[in-house]
Image 1 (spheres, one colour):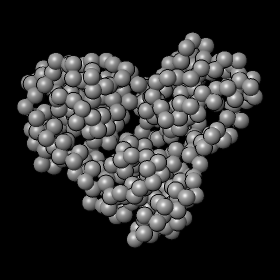
Image 2 (tube, helix red, strand yellow):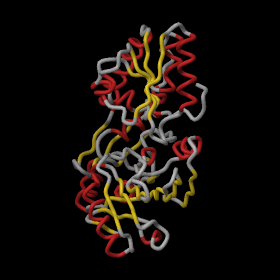
Image 3 (cartoon, one colour):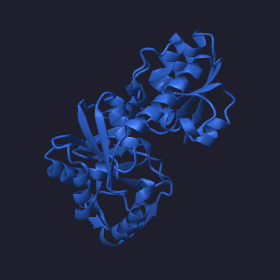
Image 4 (spheres, rainbow, N blue to C red):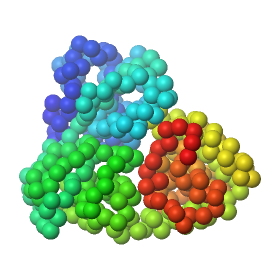
Length: 337
């Protein structure tokens, strides 16, 4: 089904099996699409009530609990293996079928449906032109940009591979093109491949850029943050309630390790990990037991050091000489390090 310029897959397959009361959630950029979709499923699919979540869904890791008696249609995100594993650890039942999935929570089901921006030929042509000299590069993409990536890959005689997320991109290559909006996903590729040339091809701004300068800026912020965190004596551990991000066993393990190292450590359980919440915590540093990218991407918005879950050892050992940038992207799936 095409709604405006977005192709949503899997809607027809829900006919006759989905609850007649549905909440639709999506990344904030697709909220208008979600509103139109809510009207369509009432008119054509026998749904009696459809509401749209006004919160920004950051990923399939971030499905919410709907109103009582409602199921969820979640569009615009992939469910990568690491998030799937963590959600199973947290008690969710998951059935996957390609890029679609059904997640069973407490009293509801969430239907994860892929959605793709429909490519604009003029935009694709401009991006391909901007990638002259990068023929044969590997082209990576988050799920919303799959069709754009496939078109760009054909234009530069490369291979489109995906979908990936900001915490799951197990790809090694010397030259990478990431088709997406902004720098978030391209920065992921660079964190995993720090010695490689990584370009972002942005269909919204219609620009092609090397992300090297963005990467260097964030790595500078991260190294400074970790050096300051080594001296922290009082450390808060922010554990999120989001089912595909929070790992209580790992958070408890981090707390014990920090206490054994002579630090005062405590856990705060939250829904949304925001800069405002972090800035109001009485602590010298904060471990982010949520999306690990918060501990990198939000560094210029907070007033204290941020530590990703798998960066804690660097703090306890008191040295970062062997720091690997990929640690900023990893979600722990057990209580170890």
